[in-house]
Length: 339
Image (cartoon, rainbow, N blue to C red; front, side):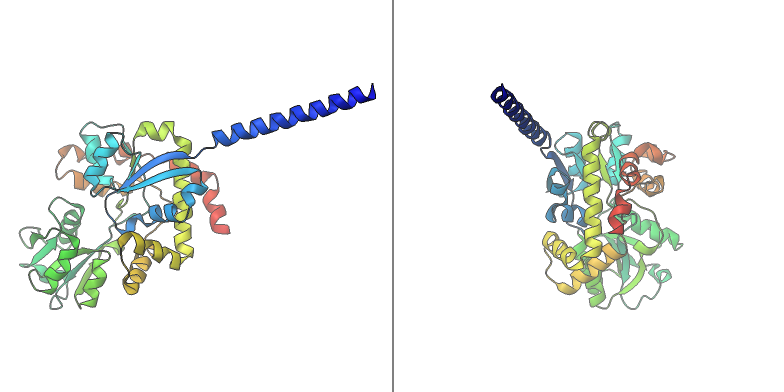
């Protein structure tokens, strides 16, 4: 009888162990990383948190298998998003608004790490203030782009009428604006990082740092389909937590941050990397990629240049603040920055 009781105990123990092992296997299978395809248009430092989340392993830590893709332009990225070829587009603010106005209403901007323009206006040394641009030429990359819009907004703020008081010249690429000004082909130009640092080296004069103008602008807007944000709430939460951890990593580990920046921008100039890192990480990157209606107002003004429907539109209709707010309410950010 005693032997039978021992046998039953062993049998029960084995059954429990088998159940535990089976449950563990089931739990492991259910915890498989979620796949996510994220695109960005060009290798600019505004996307540094995205790159760091990938390279430093924060996506993996948050149980995500993320494919990060450079698509060449926000227009191409928006087409891929609408066609379900990608899940998230970084840097798709104006494109997302234009697409919604054209009838693709299943879209929403749900975050941004950079809440202002990342441009400066530089001129030849002889021009000491913006009023002296009257009758002169100012270079932008292409008409209708964000840099062109920023240039027009800046000139109007200085009491100058774009195209009348100041001639806007379409150069083609950010890299070509610096030599155009330095060689006297134009008297001024709107410059982005890292080219504005080269302008400083050449002795060109900074007339305005638009990143410090107080302008709210969703420079690196994150866009996804509303249906995706609703159905994949947990996955989007993991994605947002990864970006927040990556931003903390960048703010606390400058050497590693500059390494990531150099890798993706293909820059090995230590001085340029230090300046670009300080410009973006220390001054511009917010701890949390929140989105607010104020971030969208200028995007709507920009979209209105080609689509009159943007005039008078409600910024709230184009954003989804929920995903980021949910992560913040969880206490995740406070806990991270207390460490």
